[in-house]
Length: 210
Image (cartoon, rainbow, N blue to C red; front, side):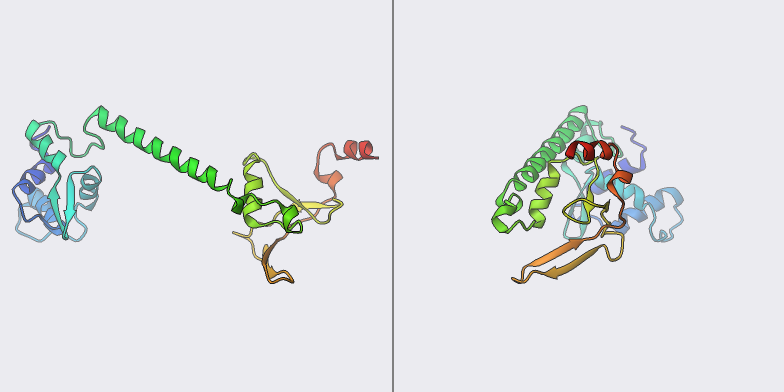
C-alpha cells in the first residue's frame, strides 16, 4: 500500500469523520493536496477518480454523506489496501465472477422456462391457426439466431422477400383488429423475388415436386 497515495490520504481523513463527508468535500480534499492555494476547486474536479473509488467499494453512502467502508478500514489497518484496484485479493475476483456467472445462469433458466409457458407455447390449431406474438417468439427460439427469416407473399410461395425491420423502417408493421376485436400486427415484406431467383436449388426442388 502506497501511504503517499492521494486516495489513501483521503481514506485516512475519512476514517475519523464520524459525520461523513460530502462529495464536494472529497473534491476539495483532492484539490487542496495538489494546489494548496486556499481556493475552491473547479466544478467536476476529480470526479473520475472519486467514481472509481466508489465503484471499488471504498465508500458507503448514507443520508447524503460518504463514509469509509468496512473493508477499506481493514485494508488501511493491514497496510494491504489498493484503492484503485477492482479487487483487493484473487479470492475476491474469483468470488465476484462466480457470482456473476451463477446469476446469468439463473436468468437464462428463467428466460428458457418462460418460453415454455402456455403464453408462449400455444398451438395455432386451437385458435383458428392464428399466430400469437408469444407463439411466434417460441417458434423462432428453436431456430439458429444466425440464420435468416423470409416472408412469402402468398400460401403457394410464388414470391418471397425480406421482412421489413419495423424498428428502423417506416410502414414495416401495421396494427389492426380481427373481426372479433383481437389486436393483430401485420409484418410487411420489403421486397419481392421469384423463388428461383432468390434461393439456391429451387429449380431442383420444383422438379422433384412435380
